[in-house]
Picture 1 (tube, rainbow, N blue to C red):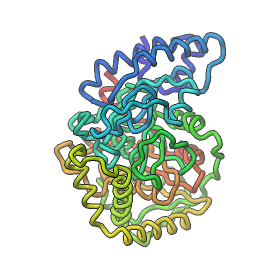
Picture 2 (tube, one colour; picture 1 turned 120 degrees about the vertical axis):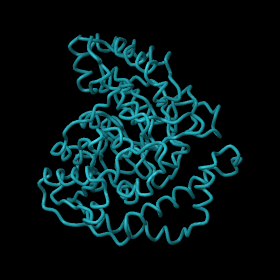
Picture 3 (cartoon, helix red, strand yellow; picture 1 turned 60 degrees about the vertical axis):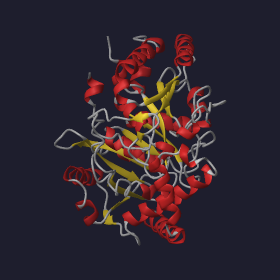
Picture 4 (cartoon, one colour; picture 1 turned 135 degrees about the vertical axis):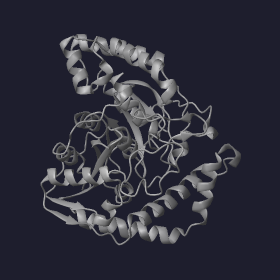
Length: 430
């Protein structure tokens, strides 16, 4: 029997069209894997088994009668800060336990309308404010490449589920890198679309200013198909003609395998390169972004009883409340202006996705996890993480492309120059 969980949606749709399998058989394959593997991964918060079975039967009928849609019969799952009708909509917070979604988020509805089978909701970092997905209420998500390491966050369940073959693609949300960091740590692809292109109705917000909904998948072509569904009005974008790279000191501060991957990608892109020098260092930008999003989250939570939040979240909110918000806003404004001016209409910024590979759960999270990813959110730019091999321990490394506003599809085209394929996890191959 073919391992349908190992292939991307394009190959899966080809198998449906050729009659080699059908959505009901593929769903059964995925549900069996979830039952067998997810107790150790803890990527799912809730399964919508009955709804998935009904959707699979409808998809099978559509393939038989020739009315299949773009994602017909493709198993997907959704980060739990996005509403899925009938399931708990908790955003990883104990404070939201028992809140059931009475409708689908707009992005989820678009996936369903394209024929996707929504399996359920995925675990995440509490309130999306963090990048480990070590959730005190719904369990610590494990990395499929090494269960003793973090999958990243805040969309850690999304990255883990796709990398482990529990779903073909997933939705996450990205405020400072929360789609792209898990994609990098899991050896898959993650896209933060241009701001405003994907509808955000039905999202529990972290930061209305910086939040973006984006897909995670096991191929560039899958990201392209999902992007077509989520943002059909998005144009093709201009192919980048100029390459920007970070200052050498920032690359030298990364782990060696990541610096090597960045150098290889730079060569493979084959574009004239120049060094980007920002008015404030990436660490300052990341810190300023944290202050902004944490303050917005505090305002959203309002008078939520503090004892319903974890000690970690309370600490982060208190820290942000004491920070200099005016200074942080100035840093973000300068960075946004500098990035927009430097990238212009025809530039692309190539960075490491993260300075480090996935780290052990027992380690303190690195302070610089989001130093490269946060740049795209600050300037409302599209950004794509592409797998770039592994380090000496077999852990995935990745690079990031940040493009001009609206250049999402151009990034996907450009990424094919450096794409060496996703990094299969041992769990995926089991």
